[in-house]
Length: 419
Image (cartoon, rainbow, N blue to C red; front, side, top):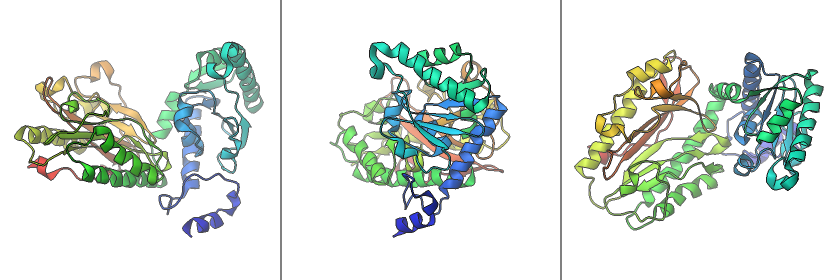
């Protein structure tokens, strides 16, 4: 009944192929979310001197318009679906047979059929197809901007399409900076989407935790989370980061068919693209039982817990990335080689700007910036000794407020590992 009421309230969007349903949409003004996000993109385009932007990353298209279509497919088949946006016009070029998916969105002024300029679509005629694609886009950009030398932001396109656009006289720049800077600051209404995704993911992780038993495979356990996410209208899990026992050290060993043994650690990084396409990103480490955790397992867990909580405690608006690195928790030498590659990172519809680096990595990898209210950050820890048997992965997702932080991920830590 709630869904019918929602459609009655939004009768002006009768043609909209709406993808976000109750209950995860309840009390969220999705039109306000879309309007804020699109205005952020245009604000940053103006700030960085970009006249038109062509988005092919489906996550960024969704951010700018709210539309989605085969996100994982689109990520590896660009350009087969793309968005052209200027300060006053938004044209979605939709995949073959899919034009109806963009209809009715107030953030999309026009839907046109896309020209797929990929090798699999064009075969040996790829160069010709890319030139045709570029000619069509150049003509449209001239029509919208009136400038044959317009500055155009590009991302994730075939090299041939980008070269052809440049040959047509357009000034080509990278679209990543304005898009990432736009996405970094969340609105209050947008945060409701973040929380909806987190709550759904926490339900899934609770089911996963309850399902743990020695003798099951990592993949069988990981599938419990994936099933729950899909049942709750989440999108997909971006990585396969669940491992057990000796496969927890070093980190980044993908979920496999390996069987979970007795009294082993099981480490999980959610990396869920959940409700409304928002990233629910927290990490927890469990114990398989049936016995109690060992002293060594508890020590690893408590050290990781200390790192996460120290680094959360120093976060506040106005802190620079460099100052954060200088004040962050000092990783003990025996765990340093296997450290997680970041101390913290931005989080929105995926992992995003900014990356906050460890003190020791800052000279080579770090860059400066300022932590601002409205940023959502994931504070990371991986503790595992080089050559050691097991490791612990913990991570918390937080919102930067006007005065400090608000902890967003509510899934509890393991009391038996903190004793």
